[in-house]
Structures are given as structure tokens and as C-alpha cells.
Image 1 (cartoon, helix red, strand yellow):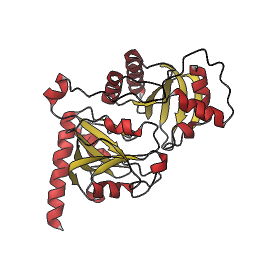
Image 2 (tube, helix red, strand yellow):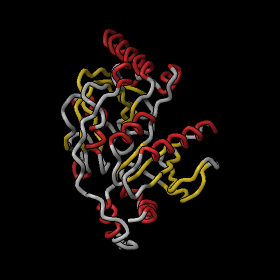
Image 3 (cartoon, rainbow, N blue to C red):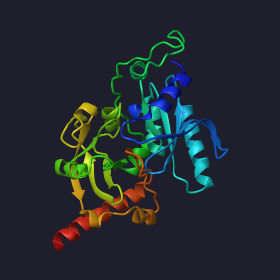
Image 4 (tube, helix red, strand yellow):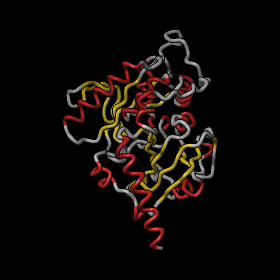
Length: 297
């Protein structure tokens, strides 16, 4: 399978590869603001420009750092909403950890998935002997190792978007069951496996703000139908403990977090929060509001 064939299929059928997003194709193989070239450019339902970099082979660390430099250069040009996204059949753990840290989205899509969608639409590949087929069996999960920076800075912090775009009220069930949940991703279980046990997560509700925080447990993600009712569309959940939540009217708003010195990655589903000091401020503020407004009831 060639990168050109990956590009053709994703450009033609983005919803089949990314069912949780409403991507509209805006461009292919062009320059964005003359900073660098992209393989695919989409606009999502929130007006975010999504620049995709496609790799037909295992992604390398250099691919990730190149995207990070590209993203940083775009940010210097102005406040335009841009999300970088790496797509490859295999992304090593070290590359995924780096992408999580810098807030770049990524998705592993195996060749088998491309071929399934191609067959559905009678798309013909150039030839099967160009590249050996990618393994369709997921790799065994590698144990996550904390580096010295993690240990020095204390816990690792994660941002989680409860995704109210299609399933209204799902966040209520997450809070009731002390869990986070995703659906529609080809790698939802793997995505939820990225945080290590004991790491902290903040729940974000679109158009409201940060409404809760908790700690990831050591239980692995598991298939579910209770949160979104989407078990047949790869719904997975992962449990959290020590949940602290506030009513929507007492949420930490995007503006309030911005005043603390951090811009929340609102369009991401699950990614690292790169400012640990601000994460601590968010935790203490949520804890304070939960106690204060509980007493007022």
C-alpha cells in the first residue's frame, strides 16, 4: 500500500476512518501558510484546521519532531486553530509518548482497515507487491516507563474531552460510574491505555469547562455499551478513582485556565497537559469549589 493510496481513501471517506469527527476536505498536498506542506487538510465541525501527515510504514521519531516544529511555526503566525495529526499503520511507544507530551493527535490504521474500506467502495490498489502487508494483529502493549522528568515533576496530567458532539449527557454517566469513555476510534482501547495507573485526568465538557478530576486506576480499558450505547462502534471505558466533580455552573472555564497560564487543548480527545503547575492549580481550584458549593447546598 502506498501513501498516495492512503491519502486517496482518507480524503474520499474520512467519516469511515474517523467516525467521531465531521471532517470536510479542504486540500491535498499543498502548503499551509507557506510554513510547510501537508498530505491532507480537513476542517472539522468546530472550524479547526486539521493537518494530516500520512506514513505507509512505521512512524519514526523524526516524523513526530517535524510535526511539532511545523505546529510551533504555525502558532507563531497567529491564533488560528490548527490541529496536527499523524496517521501510520504502526506508531512506536516512544513516538506516541512524545506526541502525547506535545499535544499532537495520532491514529494507527492498519493496512487491513484500508483494504476493508477500499473493497467496500471498489477502490483498486496499484499492486500488492509494493509493500508487504502490515500486521493486522495489534502489538502486545509495552509497559509504560516513567522517565526522570515525570518523577521529578510528580504525577503526569491528562486532558479528557467528554465528547458531547453526538451523545448528549454521556458525561453524566461517566461521572456516575467514575470512568472515562471513547467510541468510534480504531484504537480506542489503546488510546485509553496510554495513561499509567496513578496519573491524573481532568474532564472537560464542551462549552462549559473543566468539571471533574480523578486518578486512573490499574484496571485496563474494557468494552462497554453503557456510556454512549456504542459497543458495536468500539466503545471502551477506563475507570478512575478519587473523583472530584462540580456542577456545570461551577466549572473551571477555558478563560479561567487561560489566566492561569495554559491554553486547554479543547479539540483533543485525550492528551497530556504540558503545564504541571497549572494542572495543580486546576486541581486545587476544583477541590475548593467542590467543598465550597457542597456546603452551600
